[in-house]
Image 1: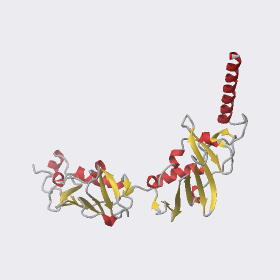
Image 2: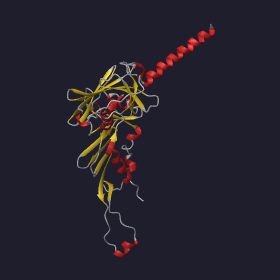
Image 3: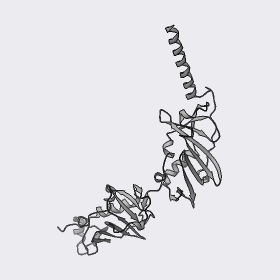
Image 4: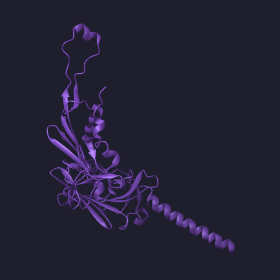
Length: 317
């Protein structure tokens, strides 16, 4: 009797395993993957990303992607990745035809449902479940097809984002040739200008050949002619060529911030400015002339701009 009971238990386990393997690998061993037409990304004018408790909308206006109900500028590189996956989703295998979606996290409680629009028309629906155990594929469903497929790559991470994740965090992009900057730290203020270093003209040609070449390039000096540390100024300007914040400050406007602890103003073809305020939890609130929204910057990143004024001036030898 005991032996029959053990055999029955083993048989039950085998049935469960067979069902699971069949569900994982699909109901058929022979199949043809659907031919998914590539979508031209330039034709996509809108994207929605739906979870059970939220929806995020991305919309293209005047060739700029905006995100959320407030229509914040979206990060171009992040949107490009999303468009790439929508446009050229690559299916590598059939995973299941059984409609047992919960084990792939493709049920309504867990899936991400992504829709791409051309005007009012939906031109692609992509349902995204969990990554496969190898993390080299993701379980997906395409358009009205009820079957579950492997899509190449762990693509869920590219879509499972919040509005703050999708916002463009570039807050300053100084591309001009800067010729003057003014730094103010509390009551201290310094103005630095770029000027060509003079070349001595009362030396003979022979002496010029024997001596080290004179510096003729631009030189940073204070407005009263004192030399400053070129490398520090150049590093500061370089940092602002692609200056990104850590996050934006929700529920606040630029006008809510007054009395900065440090302000840097740069003059080139146009004038740029960035101001930092009293530090909060190892981050500085800040505003920039190049962005409409206040933001937070990590201390190490703020210190690339917030140079101590006294340390910039070269000591007399």
